[in-house]
Image (cartoon, rainbow, N blue to C red; front, side, top):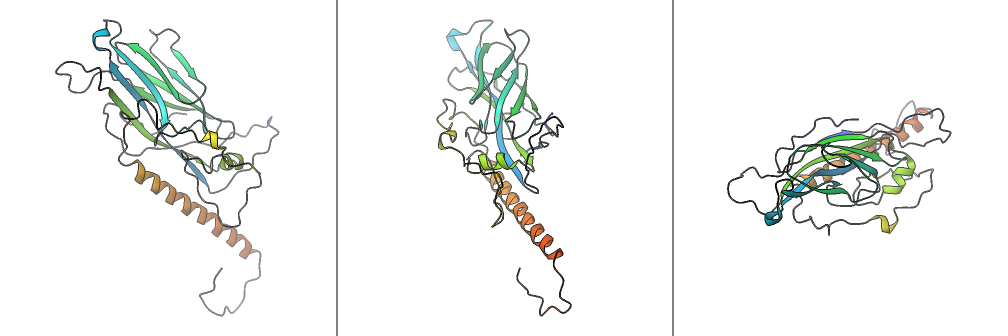
Length: 268
């Protein structure tokens, strides 16, 4: 599944919000497990993906002028391994083994080279999240926009993009597993609503922070990210309220309606 509204990776500044809505787990008649889903609920996972490139300075050669890293990370630099199972990076065919598979967080790989090219990024999710992959594309950039003057091996060239991946009607297991995870935006369920699947909250060791990443000082501080996360959380609360109203409506429809209500300010 390819991302919609793909951002232009030609600039290193923070990009406006892009929302990618991922479909549900497919209905496979051969699967005997019944998946319970939360209707009218969405889980959002803000991510950033991109590259960081350092000039090798005096160690640079004609065939290896830069060391660079391509990655997928949480937008606030949190571990997203709780949602993402595997990331595949497709490099230029001139590299040995150009298809690189990263099976666990941090989802990144480093290489040395001299040329710029497009990197295909395929994201695979855990089985209780989604069975569809998400395909993204990113242009590796080695040189700054202003190429005048000597190359610096201390200040890297960073190009990142921001996306919010949205999972509608998540499984109860997925919801319970990530409801307290800092990298995931999870709505509050209406009071009295209990999950039928009793799954423990996220284990503390799964809350691995990546803010001590060696490249943290260079990562883009998405100026709009915090506000976008607040808006997403507010949207989730509205959806939870919709769930509550629908439940109340279904109860009311099953009861006889009074012919002469006492007043119009009845509380429910």
